[in-house]
Structure formats: C-alpha cells, structure tokens
Image 1 (cartoon, rainbow, N blue to C red):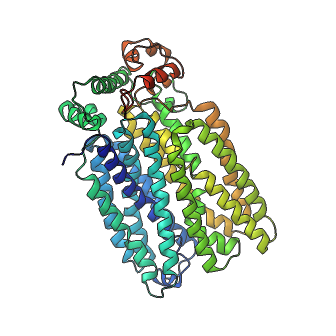
Image 2: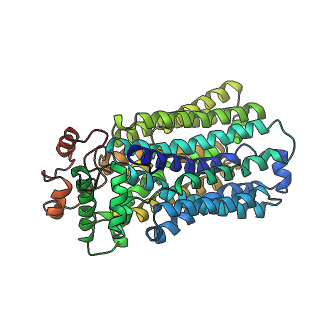
Image 3: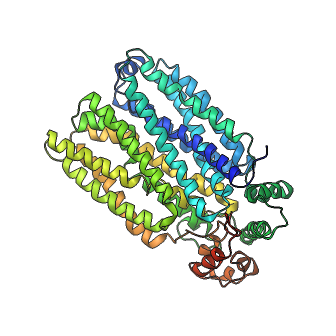
Length: 507
C-alpha cells in the first residue's frame, strides 16, 4: 500500500522521532553508569580527564558529522543520509558495548557521534520539508527534540533499573540497546521517498511531482499542488538570482540580497547559545550533580536523574502540542527569562554551605530550569533554524547550526566537571551558564524575526533586500499580494483560503 497525505507525513515523523531517540539515548546512557564499579573497572578506573573525554568525544564527533553534511549533504539527499547515519551508529555501538578499555570506548563513541551528526543535521530538515500544513511544521520538528528527551529519559530509567544488577550488564546492556533504535529508524525511513524540495533542487522534476502528489493526496494538476510547486521553483529561482557564493565577510555583516549568511549565522548563534545554557552539563552528569555536588545518596541521585529526564521529555511533548499557539520569539524570550531566574537561584544555593535543605532547594531549582527549557530553548531553536534557511543552502546552514551545538556541548561536557572539581572555581562554573541564559533575551528580541504561520518559501521574504521584493518571483511567493515586513496580511488571507487539512502552497 502506497502511503499518501497525512499518513505519509506521520510515517516521516515516526522515523525522525526514532532517529532522535538514538541521539537522546546516547546522551543519557552513560550518565547513569559512569560511577558504577562495573563501568569503572572495565575502563581501568579512569581519572576525571579520561571520563570527560569518554563522554564528550561523542559531541566532538557529532560536530564532524555535521561538517560532512555541510559539504556533501546535497549530493545524496535527506533520506539516504539518515540511513547512513544509523548504520554508522550501529558499528560504533557494537565497539562501545564490547569495550574493555577507555581507548576502545572512545573509538566507539566517536563513530556513534559521526552518525549522530548525520541524523541531527538531516532529520529536522526532512520532517520540515515533508510537512504540508504550516501549522504542523513547527510541531513536527519540535517532536524530534521531544523524542530525543524521551530517549534520554528511557536510558536513565534503564540505568536506574540496572543499579540493582551486579555484572558487566550494568552498563553493557544499556549501551548495546541503542542498536534497536537505529535499526527501527532504518526500517521506517527506508521505504520513504526523499523530500520534493530536494528533488526539485536536483532537477528531478518527475520524481518530485510524484512525491508532491502523495503528500497532498491530489493530482499535480490540482491548484493547491501547482501553487506549492510554483512556490518551490520561485524560491529556487530567487536564490539563483544571487550570483555570489557565500562570503566569509557576510557572516559578520551581510550585504547580499538573499541574506543567506545572516540567516545561517542566526541559526548558529541560536543553537550554540541554547547549548551553552547548561543543558548538556546537567544531563551528562545528572547523577553526579545530585550525588557529589548536592550531596544525595547514590540511589536517590539515580532516581532523581531519571525523574529529571522524564520532566524534560514531558515538557517537550507539552511544548509540541502548544507549539503553534505562540510565536517562536515568544517561546524563546519567555523561556530565557524563566531559565535565567531558576539558574540564578540554583547558582546562589550552590554557593552556600552544604545542607539537606540547601540540597533540596537546589534540586528543585534544577527541575524548574529543566521544565522551562523543555518546551522553549530545547526544541524551538531547532524549529527556527530549519525554517529560516534558504533551500539551496538549507543542508549547509542547518548542519553548521547544529555543529555549534556540538562544539558548545563538547566544551561544556569536557571542561565543566574539571572546572567544578577545581576548588578555586567550583560552584562559580554555573555563572558561565547563567550568562548565556541572560544574553539570549536581547539577542532574540533584536535579531530574530517571527516565522510562525509562513511557508518555508515565504520566509525568504522576511530576509531578502528591498531590491528583490518588487520582483515577479517575490510577488509569486507572496501570492501576488504586497510584500510587507512581516507578511501578516498575506498569511491571514492564505489561512482564509486554505484547503481543509492543508495550508495553501505551504509544504
């Protein structure tokens, strides 16, 4: 049976979610077993620097995977890179789960990270480009992050259950189980087509027409399908009017007509800042934070770590449901304000002499921060970054944006525990994270235009120079209505005329 319409999109969503579960699983699986005797003995009782490298090399390798996508991403298509990413992860997982030295573990996690870079760069693009309805696109990409949080929560609960075991299975089983998610992702994605946008960009018009018909469940001659096709072609032609390639200087001050470098820079800063707010420090070392720095017992620390990841997953999914109720800017600014408050109080509490009351209050502040991050800076930065990239450079722009996540996360996960262990720094490490929570507020307010309610093609009109706004191609994207700064009148008019179950011309 050939899937069509919403069923086809739902399958893409399921496949993408499974792929992000693998990311979340690996992000969380070691956090719950790092301090176990079984893991420590297998790794030769490594010192703090080695432990930091074991956990953080995955992040640096994910950056490498993103760089590979930025160079070669357009050659193979969105779907193939997802499959290749899963297969690379399987090889890395086998090496990791059979490790008897820290060197072997580092090698395995390097391969897992490269595969993860492929997945996190391509899955959100694939899901966004397969979305027909504008009011579903943000929810779909949001659900990828929710799936990653679910993977982290599941990994921590499995780790918690393995606390009661006493063999090497305490850590080998959780690490090995990641292959299940990778194979499940391949099973769902393999029968799927690639996105019509990539196919049109590669001049495979016949194949693209077929996929577009399947997504809309209408013939290519139907008006709504023709309009979607025309918008994609108009967007591609508008991008081709920019004769110059990306220039390094434009990343600092973009004077180009399409503002491509500015859009890529915005995505890089947003995702980079999100992962300098402290999320990776919290989730790679949740058990350690509760046990060592807050002073809770090992069993309580493990249970609370699993509960914290569950809170993140739950708030992610709640955020997915309400994603389109508020604008992207509202989610981001509101989230940064709430996170800043919780992080400030958490940092102040850690600076106080240790006691059970202070420890409980610090744990509560950490849970509060997680609950705010879950529906805001966790997923919305991904949503926003996939939306603002021009089609021709989408794989480059988004992979570079995600690469900033991995660089920021690597610095955090590698240097964070070393800094905290230094008695001259200690709790002051968290001031670093507090700063990024705070500076995010003015950055979004002044630098990020609202994208909610616009098709991926119409978002071009939010960034292009005035010299392009009067062209026929720009007017085609605006559906022959005047191009305004926020496209508000265009969006309302299209919503009124949309086909039931879709948004007109807005995949």
